Length: 398
Image (cartoon, rainbow, N blue to C red; front, top):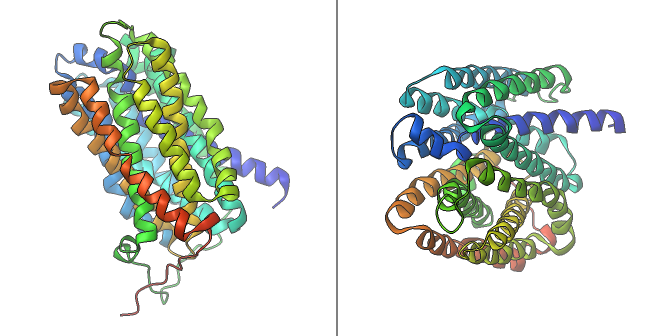
Protein backbone atom coordinates (compact mmCIF):
# COMPACT_ATOMS: atom_id res chain seq x y z
CA UNK A 1 0.00 0.00 0.00
CA UNK A 2 1.43 3.36 -1.06
CA UNK A 3 2.01 6.00 1.61
CA UNK A 4 -0.71 8.32 0.26
CA UNK A 5 -3.29 5.54 0.12
CA UNK A 6 -2.35 4.36 3.61
CA UNK A 7 -2.65 7.88 5.02
CA UNK A 8 -6.07 8.29 3.41
CA UNK A 9 -7.22 4.97 4.84
CA UNK A 10 -6.04 5.89 8.34
CA UNK A 11 -7.83 9.24 8.10
CA UNK A 12 -11.09 7.58 7.02
CA UNK A 13 -10.95 5.03 9.83
CA UNK A 14 -10.06 7.70 12.38
CA UNK A 15 -13.01 9.86 11.33
CA UNK A 16 -15.44 6.94 11.34
CA UNK A 17 -14.45 5.61 14.75
CA UNK A 18 -14.14 9.09 16.23
CA UNK A 19 -17.68 10.13 15.24
CA UNK A 20 -19.09 6.80 16.42
CA UNK A 21 -17.69 7.40 19.89
CA UNK A 22 -18.73 11.06 19.85
CA UNK A 23 -22.35 9.85 19.77
CA UNK A 24 -21.92 7.74 22.90
CA UNK A 25 -20.97 10.41 25.43
CA UNK A 26 -22.92 13.53 24.45
CA UNK A 27 -25.12 13.56 27.56
CA UNK A 28 -22.48 12.59 30.12
CA UNK A 29 -21.30 16.11 31.09
CA UNK A 30 -24.86 17.51 31.17
CA UNK A 31 -26.50 14.86 33.35
CA UNK A 32 -27.23 17.42 36.11
CA UNK A 33 -28.89 19.66 33.47
CA UNK A 34 -30.97 16.75 32.13
CA UNK A 35 -32.08 15.95 35.66
CA UNK A 36 -33.50 19.46 35.93
CA UNK A 37 -34.93 19.60 32.39
CA UNK A 38 -36.83 16.33 32.76
CA UNK A 39 -37.52 16.74 36.50
CA UNK A 40 -36.18 13.31 37.44
CA UNK A 41 -33.37 11.73 39.48
CA UNK A 42 -29.75 10.93 38.63
CA UNK A 43 -30.44 7.22 38.11
CA UNK A 44 -32.95 7.92 35.32
CA UNK A 45 -30.79 10.46 33.47
CA UNK A 46 -27.78 8.14 33.73
CA UNK A 47 -29.74 5.81 31.43
CA UNK A 48 -29.10 8.29 28.60
CA UNK A 49 -25.52 7.03 28.74
CA UNK A 50 -25.95 3.45 29.93
CA UNK A 51 -28.70 2.75 27.34
CA UNK A 52 -26.19 3.43 24.57
CA UNK A 53 -23.63 1.19 26.24
CA UNK A 54 -26.21 -1.57 26.70
CA UNK A 55 -27.23 -1.33 23.04
CA UNK A 56 -23.60 -1.66 21.97
CA UNK A 57 -23.11 -4.67 24.24
CA UNK A 58 -26.18 -6.47 22.91
CA UNK A 59 -25.42 -5.77 19.25
CA UNK A 60 -21.76 -6.70 19.17
CA UNK A 61 -22.16 -10.44 18.73
CA UNK A 62 -24.59 -10.09 15.80
CA UNK A 63 -22.30 -7.54 14.17
CA UNK A 64 -19.36 -9.86 14.75
CA UNK A 65 -21.16 -12.48 12.67
CA UNK A 66 -22.09 -9.89 10.06
CA UNK A 67 -18.51 -8.61 9.76
CA UNK A 68 -17.20 -12.12 9.09
CA UNK A 69 -19.83 -12.80 6.39
CA UNK A 70 -20.53 -9.55 4.52
CA UNK A 71 -18.61 -6.65 2.92
CA UNK A 72 -18.06 -3.70 5.22
CA UNK A 73 -19.60 -0.88 3.15
CA UNK A 74 -23.31 -1.80 3.27
CA UNK A 75 -22.96 -2.41 7.00
CA UNK A 76 -21.50 1.07 7.51
CA UNK A 77 -24.22 2.67 5.36
CA UNK A 78 -27.05 1.05 7.31
CA UNK A 79 -25.58 1.69 10.74
CA UNK A 80 -24.54 5.27 10.01
CA UNK A 81 -27.99 6.20 8.72
CA UNK A 82 -29.69 4.76 11.81
CA UNK A 83 -27.35 6.63 14.17
CA UNK A 84 -27.95 9.94 12.38
CA UNK A 85 -31.75 9.57 12.42
CA UNK A 86 -31.82 8.65 16.11
CA UNK A 87 -29.54 11.59 16.92
CA UNK A 88 -32.05 13.95 15.34
CA UNK A 89 -34.85 12.33 17.36
CA UNK A 90 -32.81 12.93 20.54
CA UNK A 91 -32.45 16.58 19.61
CA UNK A 92 -36.20 17.04 19.07
CA UNK A 93 -37.87 15.02 21.81
CA UNK A 94 -39.23 16.43 25.07
CA UNK A 95 -39.89 12.96 26.51
CA UNK A 96 -37.10 11.33 28.54
CA UNK A 97 -38.28 7.82 27.66
CA UNK A 98 -38.07 8.62 23.94
CA UNK A 99 -34.60 10.08 24.47
CA UNK A 100 -33.44 6.92 26.26
CA UNK A 101 -35.00 4.66 23.60
CA UNK A 102 -33.36 6.56 20.75
CA UNK A 103 -30.04 6.40 22.58
CA UNK A 104 -30.47 2.64 22.93
CA UNK A 105 -31.03 2.28 19.18
CA UNK A 106 -27.94 4.40 18.53
CA UNK A 107 -25.98 1.99 20.68
CA UNK A 108 -27.26 -0.99 18.69
CA UNK A 109 -25.78 0.44 15.49
CA UNK A 110 -22.49 1.80 16.86
CA UNK A 111 -20.76 -1.60 16.28
CA UNK A 112 -21.47 -1.23 12.56
CA UNK A 113 -18.88 1.57 12.59
CA UNK A 114 -16.45 0.12 15.14
CA UNK A 115 -16.47 -3.67 15.53
CA UNK A 116 -16.79 -4.23 11.80
CA UNK A 117 -13.90 -1.88 11.04
CA UNK A 118 -11.66 -3.63 13.59
CA UNK A 119 -12.44 -7.00 12.01
CA UNK A 120 -11.73 -5.55 8.57
CA UNK A 121 -8.37 -4.17 9.76
CA UNK A 122 -7.46 -7.49 11.38
CA UNK A 123 -8.05 -9.27 8.07
CA UNK A 124 -6.29 -6.64 5.98
CA UNK A 125 -3.11 -5.70 7.87
CA UNK A 126 0.07 -7.75 8.42
CA UNK A 127 0.61 -8.91 12.03
CA UNK A 128 3.69 -6.75 12.64
CA UNK A 129 1.62 -3.58 12.11
CA UNK A 130 -1.44 -4.66 14.05
CA UNK A 131 -0.43 -3.58 17.58
CA UNK A 132 0.44 -0.05 16.43
CA UNK A 133 -2.71 0.25 14.30
CA UNK A 134 -4.87 -0.95 17.18
CA UNK A 135 -3.24 1.73 19.30
CA UNK A 136 -4.20 4.32 16.69
CA UNK A 137 -7.73 2.92 16.68
CA UNK A 138 -7.87 3.41 20.45
CA UNK A 139 -6.72 7.00 19.93
CA UNK A 140 -9.72 7.54 17.65
CA UNK A 141 -12.03 6.24 20.38
CA UNK A 142 -10.39 8.69 22.78
CA UNK A 143 -10.84 11.64 20.44
CA UNK A 144 -14.47 10.67 19.92
CA UNK A 145 -15.14 10.33 23.62
CA UNK A 146 -13.59 13.73 24.23
CA UNK A 147 -15.47 15.28 21.31
CA UNK A 148 -18.82 14.06 22.56
CA UNK A 149 -18.23 15.41 26.04
CA UNK A 150 -17.00 18.77 24.77
CA UNK A 151 -19.94 19.13 22.38
CA UNK A 152 -22.43 18.21 25.08
CA UNK A 153 -21.10 20.39 27.88
CA UNK A 154 -18.83 23.09 26.49
CA UNK A 155 -19.03 23.85 22.75
CA UNK A 156 -22.72 24.54 23.26
CA UNK A 157 -23.97 25.92 26.55
CA UNK A 158 -25.36 23.11 28.75
CA UNK A 159 -28.98 24.27 28.40
CA UNK A 160 -28.56 23.95 24.60
CA UNK A 161 -27.49 20.30 24.74
CA UNK A 162 -29.92 19.51 21.88
CA UNK A 163 -27.68 21.37 19.43
CA UNK A 164 -24.90 18.92 20.29
CA UNK A 165 -27.03 16.07 18.92
CA UNK A 166 -27.61 17.96 15.67
CA UNK A 167 -23.90 18.70 15.25
CA UNK A 168 -22.89 15.10 16.00
CA UNK A 169 -25.45 13.76 13.53
CA UNK A 170 -23.96 15.99 10.84
CA UNK A 171 -20.42 14.83 11.66
CA UNK A 172 -21.56 11.19 11.54
CA UNK A 173 -23.17 11.69 8.15
CA UNK A 174 -19.95 13.19 6.76
CA UNK A 175 -17.78 10.44 8.27
CA UNK A 176 -19.71 7.44 7.02
CA UNK A 177 -20.21 9.05 3.60
CA UNK A 178 -16.45 9.52 3.42
CA UNK A 179 -15.98 5.84 4.34
CA UNK A 180 -18.41 4.68 1.67
CA UNK A 181 -16.55 6.69 -0.94
CA UNK A 182 -12.95 6.09 0.18
CA UNK A 183 -12.65 2.60 1.67
CA UNK A 184 -11.02 0.07 -0.66
CA UNK A 185 -13.10 -2.92 -1.68
CA UNK A 186 -13.14 -5.71 0.87
CA UNK A 187 -10.87 -8.51 -0.30
CA UNK A 188 -13.48 -11.01 0.72
CA UNK A 189 -16.72 -9.80 -0.80
CA UNK A 190 -18.39 -13.15 -0.18
CA UNK A 191 -17.79 -15.68 2.54
CA UNK A 192 -16.96 -19.24 1.65
CA UNK A 193 -20.11 -21.25 2.36
CA UNK A 194 -18.05 -24.40 2.84
CA UNK A 195 -15.78 -22.85 5.46
CA UNK A 196 -16.94 -23.73 9.00
CA UNK A 197 -17.37 -20.75 11.29
CA UNK A 198 -15.49 -20.07 14.48
CA UNK A 199 -17.90 -20.31 17.40
CA UNK A 200 -18.24 -17.71 20.11
CA UNK A 201 -18.15 -20.37 22.82
CA UNK A 202 -14.87 -21.66 21.41
CA UNK A 203 -13.31 -18.21 21.82
CA UNK A 204 -14.67 -17.61 25.32
CA UNK A 205 -13.50 -20.92 26.76
CA UNK A 206 -9.86 -20.23 25.86
CA UNK A 207 -8.25 -18.66 28.93
CA UNK A 208 -5.61 -16.68 26.95
CA UNK A 209 -8.49 -14.87 25.24
CA UNK A 210 -10.91 -14.76 28.18
CA UNK A 211 -8.44 -12.96 30.43
CA UNK A 212 -8.17 -10.18 27.83
CA UNK A 213 -11.96 -9.98 27.57
CA UNK A 214 -12.12 -9.60 31.36
CA UNK A 215 -9.57 -6.78 31.16
CA UNK A 216 -11.95 -4.97 28.83
CA UNK A 217 -14.87 -5.53 31.23
CA UNK A 218 -13.12 -4.32 34.39
CA UNK A 219 -11.14 -1.53 32.77
CA UNK A 220 -14.08 0.17 31.11
CA UNK A 221 -16.24 -0.47 34.17
CA UNK A 222 -13.78 1.56 36.24
CA UNK A 223 -13.30 4.27 33.64
CA UNK A 224 -16.96 4.82 32.81
CA UNK A 225 -17.98 4.87 36.48
CA UNK A 226 -15.50 7.63 37.33
CA UNK A 227 -16.38 9.86 34.41
CA UNK A 228 -20.13 9.32 34.73
CA UNK A 229 -20.36 10.43 38.36
CA UNK A 230 -17.52 12.91 38.42
CA UNK A 231 -19.90 15.78 37.44
CA UNK A 232 -22.02 15.08 40.53
CA UNK A 233 -18.97 14.76 42.80
CA UNK A 234 -17.42 18.02 41.58
CA UNK A 235 -20.60 20.06 42.05
CA UNK A 236 -20.29 19.45 45.80
CA UNK A 237 -17.97 21.04 48.37
CA UNK A 238 -15.07 21.73 48.36
CA UNK A 239 -15.13 21.92 44.53
CA UNK A 240 -18.46 23.59 43.62
CA UNK A 241 -17.72 23.21 39.88
CA UNK A 242 -20.08 24.44 37.18
CA UNK A 243 -20.96 22.17 34.24
CA UNK A 244 -18.50 24.06 32.03
CA UNK A 245 -15.72 23.65 34.62
CA UNK A 246 -16.31 19.90 34.83
CA UNK A 247 -16.44 19.53 31.06
CA UNK A 248 -13.07 21.24 30.65
CA UNK A 249 -11.55 18.51 32.81
CA UNK A 250 -12.43 16.06 30.05
CA UNK A 251 -9.52 17.59 28.13
CA UNK A 252 -7.42 15.07 30.06
CA UNK A 253 -8.76 12.66 27.44
CA UNK A 254 -6.03 13.99 25.18
CA UNK A 255 -3.70 11.83 27.25
CA UNK A 256 -5.33 8.81 25.66
CA UNK A 257 -4.74 10.11 22.14
CA UNK A 258 -1.01 9.98 22.81
CA UNK A 259 -1.08 6.81 24.93
CA UNK A 260 -2.78 4.62 22.29
CA UNK A 261 0.01 4.46 19.68
CA UNK A 262 2.72 4.51 22.37
CA UNK A 263 1.14 1.51 24.07
CA UNK A 264 1.25 -0.46 20.83
CA UNK A 265 4.97 0.20 20.52
CA UNK A 266 5.50 -0.50 24.24
CA UNK A 267 3.74 -3.86 23.95
CA UNK A 268 5.97 -4.78 21.05
CA UNK A 269 9.02 -3.92 23.14
CA UNK A 270 8.29 -5.22 26.67
CA UNK A 271 5.38 -7.59 26.05
CA UNK A 272 1.65 -7.24 26.64
CA UNK A 273 1.85 -8.65 30.17
CA UNK A 274 4.25 -5.99 31.43
CA UNK A 275 2.19 -3.35 29.67
CA UNK A 276 -1.02 -4.51 31.35
CA UNK A 277 0.68 -4.46 34.77
CA UNK A 278 2.00 -0.96 34.13
CA UNK A 279 -1.48 0.25 33.20
CA UNK A 280 -3.02 -1.32 36.31
CA UNK A 281 -0.43 0.34 38.57
CA UNK A 282 -1.06 3.76 37.02
CA UNK A 283 -4.81 3.23 37.34
CA UNK A 284 -4.46 2.38 41.03
CA UNK A 285 -2.52 5.57 41.74
CA UNK A 286 -5.08 7.62 39.83
CA UNK A 287 -8.04 6.29 41.83
CA UNK A 288 -6.28 7.04 45.11
CA UNK A 289 -5.65 10.61 43.97
CA UNK A 290 -9.33 11.07 43.12
CA UNK A 291 -10.13 10.58 46.81
CA UNK A 292 -8.25 13.76 47.76
CA UNK A 293 -10.23 17.02 48.26
CA UNK A 294 -7.99 18.99 45.92
CA UNK A 295 -8.61 20.28 42.40
CA UNK A 296 -4.95 19.71 41.53
CA UNK A 297 -5.08 16.12 42.82
CA UNK A 298 -8.30 15.39 40.94
CA UNK A 299 -6.87 16.83 37.72
CA UNK A 300 -3.66 14.81 38.05
CA UNK A 301 -5.72 11.75 38.99
CA UNK A 302 -7.84 12.07 35.85
CA UNK A 303 -4.74 12.36 33.67
CA UNK A 304 -3.36 9.18 35.23
CA UNK A 305 -6.77 7.52 34.97
CA UNK A 306 -6.76 8.07 31.21
CA UNK A 307 -3.14 6.96 30.89
CA UNK A 308 -3.72 3.78 32.91
CA UNK A 309 -7.01 2.81 31.31
CA UNK A 310 -5.94 3.38 27.72
CA UNK A 311 -2.70 1.51 28.37
CA UNK A 312 -4.73 -1.51 29.52
CA UNK A 313 -7.23 -1.17 26.68
CA UNK A 314 -4.69 -0.79 23.87
CA UNK A 315 -2.49 -3.58 25.25
CA UNK A 316 -5.44 -5.96 25.61
CA UNK A 317 -6.92 -5.37 22.16
CA UNK A 318 -3.49 -5.58 20.56
CA UNK A 319 -2.65 -8.81 22.39
CA UNK A 320 -6.02 -10.29 21.43
CA UNK A 321 -5.59 -9.66 17.71
CA UNK A 322 -1.97 -10.83 17.73
CA UNK A 323 -3.18 -14.23 18.94
CA UNK A 324 -5.73 -14.78 16.19
CA UNK A 325 -5.37 -16.28 12.76
CA UNK A 326 -9.11 -16.52 12.07
CA UNK A 327 -12.53 -15.43 13.31
CA UNK A 328 -11.39 -11.83 13.84
CA UNK A 329 -14.92 -10.44 13.55
CA UNK A 330 -16.31 -12.69 16.26
CA UNK A 331 -13.25 -12.35 18.49
CA UNK A 332 -13.35 -8.54 18.38
CA UNK A 333 -17.12 -8.54 18.82
CA UNK A 334 -16.68 -10.54 22.02
CA UNK A 335 -14.02 -8.13 23.23
CA UNK A 336 -16.31 -5.17 22.61
CA UNK A 337 -19.21 -7.03 24.23
CA UNK A 338 -17.22 -7.52 27.44
CA UNK A 339 -16.00 -3.92 27.18
CA UNK A 340 -19.47 -2.42 27.05
CA UNK A 341 -21.06 -4.85 29.45
CA UNK A 342 -18.43 -3.61 31.88
CA UNK A 343 -19.33 -0.01 31.07
CA UNK A 344 -23.07 -0.59 31.37
CA UNK A 345 -22.74 -2.56 34.62
CA UNK A 346 -20.26 -0.02 35.95
CA UNK A 347 -22.54 2.95 35.32
CA UNK A 348 -25.67 1.17 36.57
CA UNK A 349 -24.19 -0.28 39.77
CA UNK A 350 -22.13 2.83 40.44
CA UNK A 351 -25.25 4.98 40.31
CA UNK A 352 -26.60 2.99 43.25
CA UNK A 353 -23.28 3.01 45.11
CA UNK A 354 -22.86 6.75 44.66
CA UNK A 355 -26.47 7.54 45.54
CA UNK A 356 -26.48 5.53 48.78
CA UNK A 357 -22.84 5.48 49.92
CA UNK A 358 -21.02 8.36 48.25
CA UNK A 359 -17.89 8.94 46.23
CA UNK A 360 -15.31 7.34 48.54
CA UNK A 361 -17.14 4.01 48.67
CA UNK A 362 -17.53 4.02 44.90
CA UNK A 363 -13.80 4.57 44.38
CA UNK A 364 -12.99 1.84 46.92
CA UNK A 365 -15.05 -0.70 45.00
CA UNK A 366 -13.40 0.34 41.74
CA UNK A 367 -9.97 -0.29 43.30
CA UNK A 368 -10.97 -3.90 43.93
CA UNK A 369 -11.68 -4.39 40.22
CA UNK A 370 -7.97 -3.85 39.47
CA UNK A 371 -7.41 -7.45 40.56
CA UNK A 372 -8.58 -8.49 37.08
CA UNK A 373 -6.02 -6.66 34.87
CA UNK A 374 -3.26 -7.48 37.38
CA UNK A 375 -4.10 -11.19 37.15
CA UNK A 376 -4.33 -11.02 33.35
CA UNK A 377 -1.01 -9.19 33.16
CA UNK A 378 0.71 -11.83 35.28
CA UNK A 379 -0.58 -14.67 33.10
CA UNK A 380 0.20 -12.78 29.90
CA UNK A 381 3.70 -12.03 31.15
CA UNK A 382 4.35 -15.66 32.00
CA UNK A 383 2.79 -17.42 29.04
CA UNK A 384 2.87 -14.83 26.24
CA UNK A 385 6.19 -12.99 26.45
CA UNK A 386 6.43 -10.12 23.97
CA UNK A 387 3.09 -11.10 22.48
CA UNK A 388 4.31 -14.52 21.38
CA UNK A 389 2.09 -17.55 21.34
CA UNK A 390 -0.44 -17.62 18.57
CA UNK A 391 -3.92 -18.96 19.20
CA UNK A 392 -5.28 -20.30 15.97
CA UNK A 393 -9.02 -19.68 16.00
CA UNK A 394 -9.88 -22.88 14.21
CA UNK A 395 -13.53 -23.91 14.08
CA UNK A 396 -14.72 -26.83 16.17
CA UNK A 397 -14.46 -30.13 14.39
CA UNK A 398 -17.56 -31.78 15.83
